[in-house]
Amino acid sequence: MTLWCMLYVLQSLFVLYVRIMEQDLKMYTRSQLALRNGQDRDEIWVAYKGLIYDVTTSRLWRNGKHYEHWAGQDLSEELEQDAPHTHHVFDKFQVVGKLKH
Figure 1 (cartoon, rainbow, N blue to C red):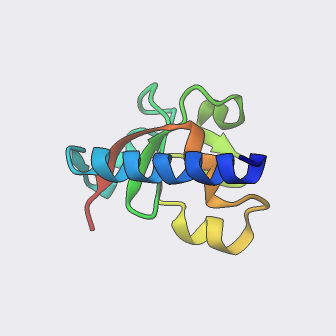
Figure 2: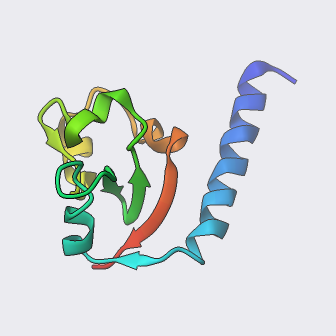
């Protein structure tokens, strides 16, 4: 099996795992997410495409800020518009909830 095939299989398994985990995730409002900004509470969370990720352990999100992006927000539009990386940047972070719309 080539490296690309193995990566594709791993990515597919991860997507399946996230979908299974999504079913039991707690729902959070935008106001609840906003409190996890690294300033009001120690937790640093961001939302992307309806899922909330805990980025507390990332050195790039110290104090709740990553370049011009602030934690405690839905970053879906920002990531689509001006981020130099893809959505796969969230693959290494734990999904902690779902964002209520």
